[in-house]
Length: 172
Image 1 (tube, rainbow, N blue to C red):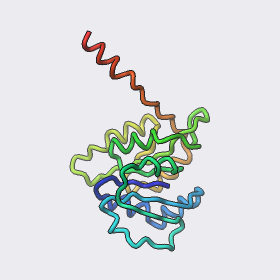
Image 2 (image 1 turned 90 degrees about the vertical axis):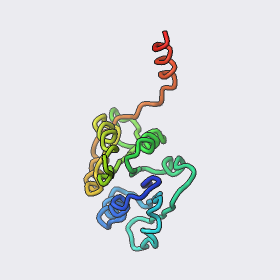
Image 3 (image 1 turned 180 degrees about the horizontal axis):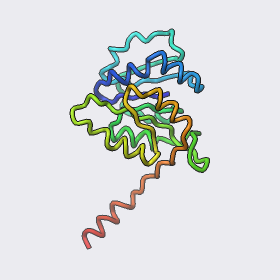
Image 4 (image 1 turned 90 degrees about the horizontal axis):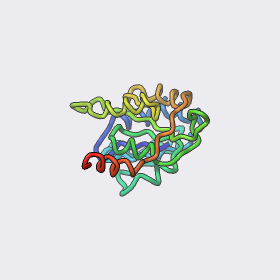
């Protein structure tokens, strides 16, 4: 499991993934390791208990999260737009997808403490399109259950031809 909170802090997400209930639930689904990109929250979770059901490691920042996302069977992410798209495009793992497709399993946790809660709109839209499961921090257990029971839709590949086509249509 790979967890990312982004560049700032998200104490509610850290607390949710480190809770005994979440750890036990993930273990029942066969997960054994959790890597947390904790941003400025790293100091808040050190030292990490060794009594947890999952082996947990954490770091603050890296130049790229790509390798951690590629290795993960499940990604639990904050709801920043860039991170959601990167997680969905980070490769295909054997997840339960529509028509037996191989899909990336992504749970997006919306930070409901943000002033304008701007993350919620895109997270809900991607959830509505069945590309990922979105939730609030207190709903993480339900989201973990859901991600293992629903058929996710494969996220479309990036189409680099669309922008030039739209630009051409606009100019002409």
